[in-house]
Amino acid sequence: MTPFVFRKSSYSNPQLECVEVATNVAGTVAVRDSKDPEGPMLRFTPAAWAAFQAVLAEEG
Image 1 (tube, rainbow, N blue to C red):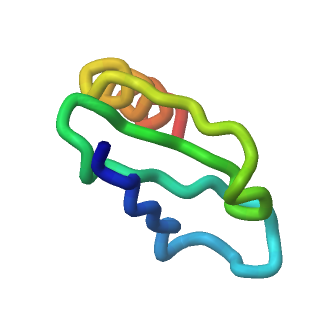
Image 2 (cartoon, rainbow, N blue to C red; image 1 turned 45 degrees about the vertical axis):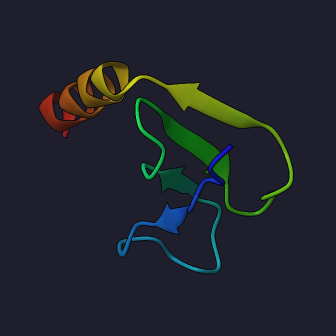
């Protein structure tokens, strides 16, 4: 299994909680809490992740 390579947004404040996202595994977008990298991880299809981002863009 390919390990996930997580990254933080350049907009993140290193002192505050934020999420990290990995998109390096085909067919999967993984999300985790940056303060608990060994903790639980959510996995989405790329289509579900894109739909989530679209809703956020509409709200912003």
